[in-house]
Amino acid sequence: MGGEKAARTLSIVLSPQALAILAFAGVSAASCPEAVAWAVPLTASVYAGLPAVLVAVEERRSGSKDHEFSLDQRASVMARCVPAYALGSLLMLALGLPTPMWGLGLMYAANTTLNLAVNRFWRMSVHAFSAAGALSLLTLFYWPEPALAGAAILPAVFWARLRLRAHTPGQLLGGAILGALISWMEMRVILSLP
Image (cartoon, rainbow, N blue to C red):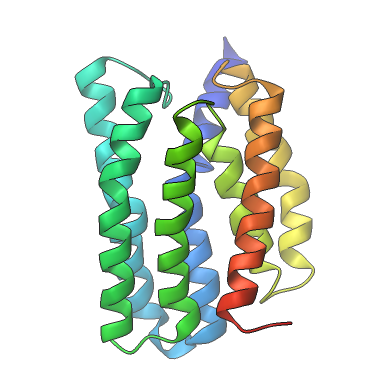
C-alpha cells in the first residue's frame, strides 16, 4: 500500500505538467534570463496549468485516478491542449521572447499531436515521453546536469507508472525513446545546430 502512495506522488511530481515547468524554466534561464520572472509563470499557465485543469476535470468526470484514462479520454485532453500550445507559442513570439522559448511552445504542440496520433492505437507513456524529452532538450543548454538528473528521474517515472499498472515496460520505453529523440532533434533544428 505504501508503495502505491509513493508511486502516485511520483506520478504527480514528475507529471508531464510539472516537467513542462522544468523545461520552460531551463530554456528561459538559458536563452533569456532577464525574462524568467514573467516568462516562466506565463508558460507554466499555458503548458502546465491548462493540461492540469483538463486532467483534473476528466478525472472528476470519469472517476478515474492517476491519469488512468481510456485512449479516448487521453485523446480528448490532448486534442484540447494542441491549439492552446500553438497560441501560447504565438504569444511568446509576439512578446519578443527568443526563438528557443517560442520554439519550445511549438514543440509542445507538435509533440502532443504526435502523442495524439500514437495514442489512437497504442498507450505510449506520456509521462516517460515528457521526462525523457525535457531532459534531452535541456542537455543542449546544460551539460551534463540534465543527463545526470535523468539517471534518477527516468527510473522513478518508470517505477511509478509500472507500480500503478498505468503502462507496460514497452509503453514506457517507447515513450522515453521517442520523447528523447524527437525533442533533441526538434530543439537542434530550432537552435540551428548542425
